[in-house]
Image (cartoon, rainbow, N blue to C red; front, side, top):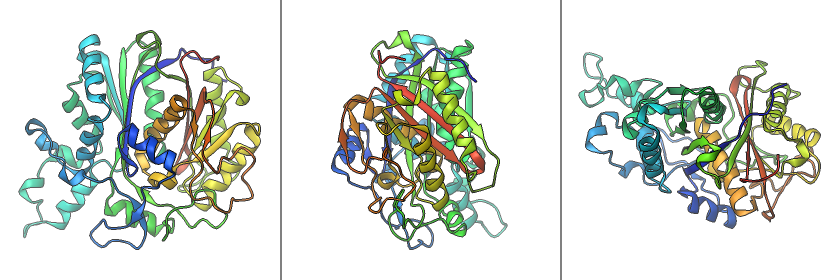
Amino acid sequence: MPVPIPPLAVSAYTATSAMGHGLDAHLEALHERRSGLRPNDFGSAPLPCWIGRVDGVEAVALPADLAGWDCRNNRLAWLGLNQDGFLDRVLAARDRYGASRVALLLGTSTASIGATEEAYRRLDADGRFPPDLQRPPVHAPHSLAGFAAAALGLEGPCLTVSTACSSSAKVFASAERLIRLGLADAAVVGGVDTLCDSVLFGFNALELVAREPCRPFDRTRGGISIGEAAGFALLERAEAAPHAPRLLGYGEASDAHHMSTPHPDGLGAELALRDALARAGLQPAQVDYVNLHGTASLKNDEVEAALVARAFPPATRASGTKGYTGHTLGAAGAVEAAIALLAIEHGLVPGNLGGDTPDPACGPQFAWENEQRPVDVALSNSFGFGGNNACLVFARAGAPA
């Protein structure tokens, strides 16, 4: 069993999704229980489904010195970095510690594959990419992190994590290890994924895409709604930001049960949960709110609801928020971490959106409507394909551990 770790300060964070640009827009949408999902208007042949599309991505213009990185994913990343004063906070940390002492760890499941799709659709007579897309760094899994490193002027450890839907949750764990081992003094973490044909048609081929807006934890749920998002956080040692919320712990596990289906008993998810609480030095009863992975797929919700019912007391509150954003894939961990941090900051438990007829597996922990109550400790679940599970524990500064 892991031992408790020194907490880290989350000295800045931001989110951009179908709910809106920045934290205020997300908080307002949560308070109003307003979903960002809309009928699909994206793709070379739009599927009949609903999506969580971010407005304004097409209008983003990258600075001239970053133009070689231009693609939808990096435009959304740039949009996200420029919300909530986040860019200024990172540049201040870079000045404080030095560019080589700030790590950059980003999660994504598709990177800039949308640009590669476009390049293949526009092959010339000789089968070559069109001139404007002959930019090899864009057609690589490391495109997002490479772009962000250039945009932020960072020279420290730089890592791309691609473990499906847990990608941008696992970067928090990697950052904690780098800082604890003295390899970095701060870390920019987060994730970005954008809509593209590969994602929409790929999940549709697996018969996982709902034709209506997704309904997490509803007994008649019909599948997921794909979304896009960007989420970022700046992690530093606790003394650098005494009043900032804390990353208290994390847990990671791989159940390796099936390529796209979780272990029926949630063994990997439960191991990640237990390890996260152990590193945080907490008992389940000390968790006030759990932001659930809650994809609205049949198996995920069934397994996760059972895990919550057996792991937490009735007083713990739990809900899923993909009814607001859609499933933002590699960005989900970062965006839902931001929602967990908003819950702590504003004392808001967001009600599960879309679960009008709750699945019988859901216990008394589920919050079906918004609840205004103190949240000192919040946990965020991210469970990816292949059993890539991650759980994060956040707390208010000064909350008992």
